[in-house]
Image (tube, rainbow, N blue to C red; front, side):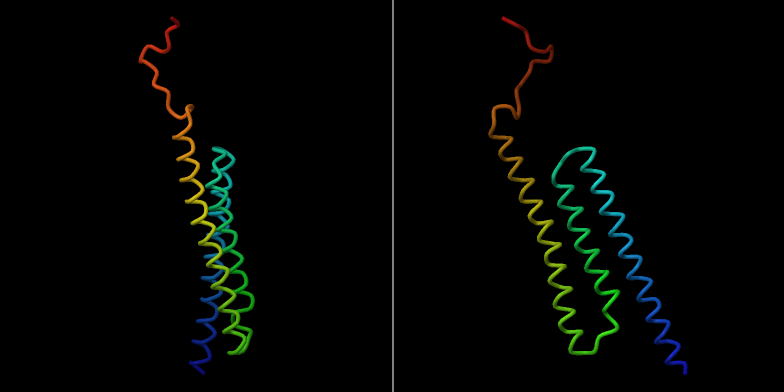
Length: 123
């Protein structure tokens, strides 16, 4: 009897924690979308997309994690870890994209023009 109560309490806490993590991922995604709106930097889009992918991962695990038997749990775990991998790959791609754009900007003539402290003087 106490074991059943502890098991149900553990399940309840597991669902609550999963929901809290999902909510945090949603808030993070909204935060990064807002950062994109203000700066127009694509890196924020990659971060927001990654958070949305990880949110989907949490929703799948929360909705279907406890209701499947042991064999289906293995295939669910593979799916969940594959989705997480996609989320982290999106972040990695965003970092690479940001660095490449910075290198292109450095090599262009418009990146850094030295202007004297008094501004440009016409000759």
